[in-house]
Image (cartoon, rainbow, N blue to C red):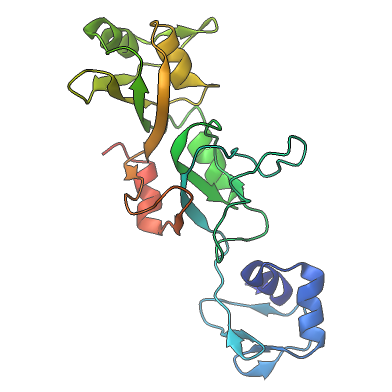
Length: 238
């Protein structure tokens, strides 16, 4: 059960005060009966809520897959630096109060970014104890060598800290495009891991979180919602 004003505020991306005003204006109905108090509660599994005669859809939390483009930062606020954030480019219909990127991709890194308003879920996928695998495709200035693959498997040292073992394999004939799978989230980790081997990353794209792949139909900047079955894949390695 949730308060009517909270349901309206979340579903319509308005403030709680604005939601209460809609109730006072008698624009809100529950199961065909006008709601008299904003603190009245409703069960979204059973009750139908309408605002101005239009049924509203409500999910307590949302999970969004974005194909992050280059040039935007993984942050909720870019006002201090004047930079555009991933929230600034959310397409119409995806905006909602309380959204934030669950994890970060560098400004020039592209690909799968998960945006949500579920703090507990974000904590779980970012927790070092969970070791959620993240898969990247990297374009490099030098070809990957067998010694590099072995070093990644053993765990390379960056900044005086030993990384957990990672998977590395070339996926192009010249060896300059490679797939790398890590289970940590250290600062600039993939780039620094390659740098420790004398290799520069020219382009980097996240393609998968756990076993959930980036939707190939999403152009840079496009988004779609993630369903419950897909969320479970994030915690799977297969």
